[in-house]
View (cartoon, one colour):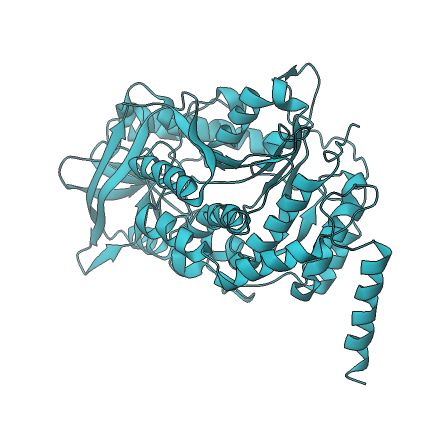
Length: 542
């Protein structure tokens, strides 16, 4: 009996290959999809046996990490990837300028120490991006500000300029009963495969009155702190125990209801002294300090924190290169692949998103190593400013394909650019180190059979799921929102959401080489077949 299931599984796969006309083909149609099995085997061999993905990842993390937008390390990463493109033999390697974005920022030195009447302990913490530093080490007592209403702020006026301020109650501790790392189960993949059009739901009615009142109070607290300028505002990371600290940017006081596009961010200010220094502690240290203050035991912090702001170049840059198309009729049409190059600053940005960037560089290496001559132009773009709101990809799309001021997902009143009609597809990787297990259709049902066919040669890696579902929060959305086919792949979570995402744990060691090599192989096959189709991929509105 143990041998029967694999036997019939193999027969089923063979049947699917025959049913979907799987055969070697240079040109193919979306209406009768096929797989060029000879090329796929070559891609597999090159991608698995000769993988360079970890080499690219090490340069991006160990040497050029972290890569905060508009930081010196991001500038270095721009030059490295552009040079790497040229070394691979890509053409038209260049930096696409967008913006202006605003001030650059770099953390140059940081250490925190705590002293009590009973003990000393070092504090594990990270400053939030664009927080000002100090020329010399500073010392001050910690004060917990009990703020239940705006009226409570006045008792602290003039009292906190030489203090480290805490305003949040500590996070309640709880053991972690779930595994840190995981892969998608067969049940979850089946659920994704069975997804259909979502049922329309009535509007929720907006935020609750309690949420509105809390947002107003938070705005008043930040405004007060901006006026009073304590030595630093202390909090704990928005996710994580066991020393994990997940952080992003320093907060600015923006009135509740301010549109996202109009909100003031620290990199946009003219006077950096308006920014309150903000530091996130690991939850265990934050809780310890709070409990000491509860016992009326004083805690003094010594902070050494040197930062640098940069205003010599306020623009961001995407790194672009391509393999030109060879078909006289289709050569001007474009197949794109990409990932965001920027990261947050508490680690080296390995899974978010040197992983995706290294994968896409490896895809181009594979195609060049096989001397592929695509019918359409294959273009790679490594994006800047994704962590700041998908800015780099949105600006690239606006410059080259279509520009719209409409809400996400609306294609009304767009300004169409010349290459809009020449665009076929964009493929993105940005969910950590986990292997591709399938692809999101972004509700473009017409592509289901095509994508299922292209995934069939990777069934041995359990990478066969095609879901109607849309996913967001990364750069394919910039294409999808203007009606262009843009796709993110389904990936195993591994430790992404539990450990590495935006945290001080996101180092090279968290990358899984096998997963990245397989992902690059699958993406390379998708990019190749898209470039060789007789027609462009259909759009949702076609």
